[in-house]
Amino acid sequence: MRLDIPYEQERPRSVNNNTVPPLEPSEVERRRDSLAARASEDRGPAEHVRRSPRQSMSQTNSVAVRREVSREPPHEQDRDRRPRRNNLPQQMVGLALRDEERTLLAEVGRFRVIATRDLAETVYGNRDGRMERDIAFLRQKGLVDVDAVNARRDGRGGRVERIEVVVLTRQGRNLVRQTGGLPKDQQLYSGLVKPREVEHDAQIYRAYRKHAEGIERRGGNNLRVKLDFELKADVQKAIYAERKADPKRDMNEIKQQVARDFDLPFVHGGVQIPDARIVYDIDPKPDDDVGQGSRTGHEDIEVLTAAYSPGHLRAKAQAGFRVYASSSDRASVTAKIERDHNLMQDILEL
Image 1: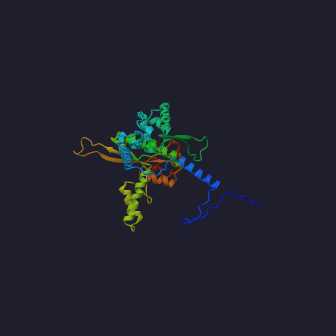
Image 2 (image 1 turned 90 degrees about the vertical axis):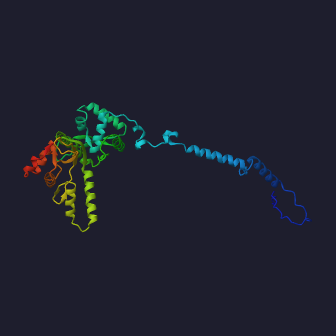
Image 3 (image 1 turned 30 degrees about the vertical axis):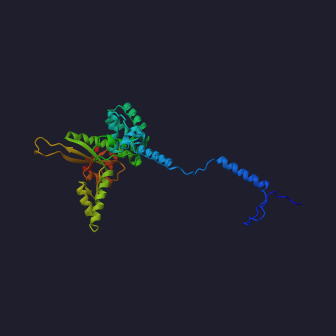
């Protein structure tokens, strides 16, 4: 069977004028040309039409105007695009806090973690209801976190005691740093670290409050706190610097020198670091020499627990720190060093 194909192949054209004119286009070719012409009409004028010089200058000027508008002074631009002052989030700007709330944030920041029962006693005068409302407000604003941890067992039976503690968030620490009115050299902490040591760390604040009362009675003021985190870091940096300066120097000699520089005891071949160092100012007395300004003093405190080994207890007691122990830990501590009666007499009760 023969099939008629309705497409004719285009024949080559000759440049000779005497040649026979080309054949008329077929129906398929006419239809194809018609569709191409219609599509060209639908597209409209070409997009790459050349613009006149006047149009180009007009558009260039409009771009320049837009750029000049973007260079407005910061106070004329959208206020929401400006960075928050002092890097505080929006909900913190202009936040009004009560005196107890500011004190709570500052105390927790200085000691990293404080038990709510101690805050109720020292900051709120045993007004538990007001403290709970303030903590709920500060927690809602993202300034503090509240957690409950189990107290140490130490072989004791009975019901497990739960201790509720408060720590600052990073936002809370930033707020205290900028609005707390604390000295510049006062270190601030945030977050809960070493949950197994929370009970011991929370007792440091209680020991501080007891010891600070005696310092203030003797005329000390402007109290600052350095926790063992900060002291250890400073001591390690000093040891590293001495070691780097003279690699051949005896390490034991370096540690002794660093201990003297930081006024820390050197016991059993190591620099003893207290749980906290209380730094305070002493105003001159009327009978002091004229021109003598205020002096600076410090006292170191340590909290002993039943988890300490006998050797650790002896080293801390021999270091000359003001040592404290809770009533529940005191019996276990004294039993471990019962042969050193002089050491037991120096342990103060929290």
